[in-house]
Amino acid sequence: MKKTTTVLVILFIVIIFQFCSKKDAVIVTTPPSTTALTPTLPATIFNYNTNFPAHILAALIADDNTPANNPITNDGATLGRVLFYDKKLSKNNTVSCGSCHKQEFSFDDNIALSKGFEGGFTDRNSMAILNIRFYKSGKMFWDERATTVEKQALQPIQNHVEMGLTLAELETKVKELSYYTALFQNAFGSTIIDSVKIARALSQFERSIVTYQSKYDRVKQGQENFTTAEAQGELLFNTAPPPPPGGGANPPSCNGCHTAPMFINSAAPPFGFPDLVDLGISNLSKFKSGSLRNIANRTSLFHNGSVTNLQSMFAAGAPGSGTQPIPAHAANPQNAANLIAFMNTLTDNTILTDPKFSDPFK
Image (cartoon, rainbow, N blue to C red; front, side, top):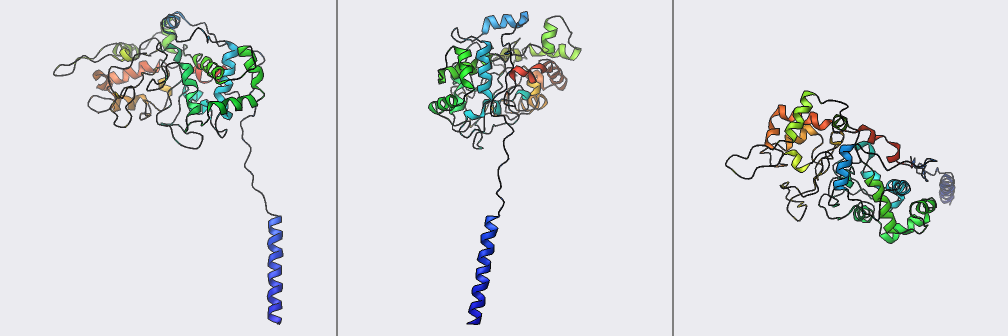
């Protein structure tokens, strides 16, 4: 009996101790996000309609894909900027368009495949959002599946890996965020919010991201001169290599697929990129020719992000390597060095820090 009493007393003490311990337990909370809940915008909105130098303006007149019903306005691009960086436009409020198109990397991502809202990875490398208004055809994505910038703008938001929302969910979320009321009123003269206007605003902001202040641009305006290596690189860039041994079609020059001054080509490339998994445009192993401007600032190149810099690009694409068909004359190390020197002149560093293209939630 005495032993039983002792056991009961000990059991009672243990229960009391556990109860007190639970009551006094420290509750661990997740640190608050450093991202601001509302955007910070300037009192006087930024100007998104730039006065371009003559050589850029000529290309814009010839190739601009901006539709008549969606011209770039300062208010529209301002709204687009907020939408572009707003992580609340994803399923769990963790990912924005700007998460995969980072300003500091020329609106490209710094990893081969981008992370979505649940940590999954995209099928392809995030294509840089630079100078997209100069794609005359207006077709977007590596496989050109979107026929306009406006149609491109909403696809990542609806993608089950990237941002994970339906259009109905997107509209509901934006309507519930009070700071959008005035922004839509200013941009479109109405507080009515729908996915069409969201796409139009995003497109205005994306089209406004244009590079035109590189050394290349200053040379074309007579303000600077190329070095010997840069000048030789430009010549090589515009020169078609000799035909392959044994005959066959003459391969194009670099400029044939990346046409100056924006180093873009709206047409599908004349050759394929051997890939047994991703067949690209019309299942022909072809992929969109992206702008080479600011390419030296990017760390994931090609549709699969398989190359990290210009040096490895020429090494990976040398004739006989079985990957990207880089022109044959680039296999010469000195020629490759000169081409790289020229391509480095295409970098516009101002775009990397320009506040009108920055994240307003920081």
